[in-house]
Image 1: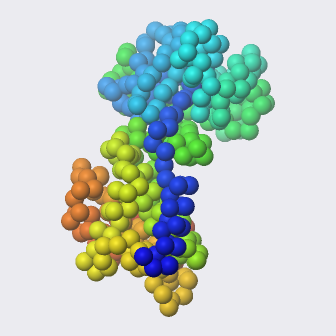
Image 2: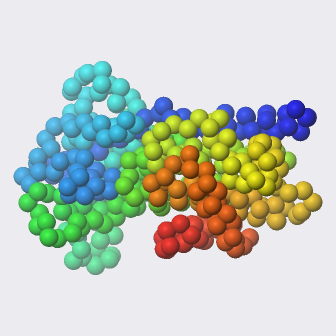
Length: 369
């Protein structure tokens, strides 16, 4: 192994040790609020469930959730639906104590006009959570108010709870007695879901939550676009080839886990990279990495090459999974990779997250976001 190859391997190992996902983590979420605040409906909406596929049963009788409801929704995602954390504490079991000590997201659900009596319960939730969101559910009861009137309601809740942000939502239609001929009436849920994922990303737990969603397209496209933009930036660095290779491997492992729930090792993710263009570049990682930043060209062009290759690679991975395939289908991966590489990508595209997201959606899903 040459000195350059040794340096490449060290830089790659350093990057992967820092950035490769830890698939052993868990997501703990507490959804807290008074009885009949619509917590169960919010959970169903948040997880993109239909009436026939609810993860948290909604009752037609007011106040059906009167105690602590544990929802082991997924191997990696654990949700508690409860009136307050005091209700969880009263159980005084090892399970509840473990949960109280590891809450990643606390969603505090309120309804109606501002109520100062909610402050104590909200403060208790904040004490036990890394991130706390306030959701003003059943906001449709204020729809007859002017825009200014609606803002006043939100501002009053902000003042009572001492928060800067409140998410107004509507989660109507999950009750069993709801007219089944009418569609679900859901508003503001995308904003809440996006915020949950943003918070979880800080501890690299976002992919665990995204895996539970039915429609993953927006979020897997976001993972791909983030990787592309990171690759463009890395092309300007001395160890750019190794870093870009690591970025690609991390993204592929994340996408594989989101779509299949299976853990792809660092070795397996890296072994996949050269297969996208093995016939022209050879099969070693070092040769693959060298192709990402061709020598003798200006930095901006190097960024376009690195970004374009990364976009085509991750686009191919997403397309194969969306078609129900898997990463063993090397011929399909290579075919789609080559097709996407034909797409004209400008430097401006590679500087804009929204523009690149739109482009990827057009390529993969033949639609706008």
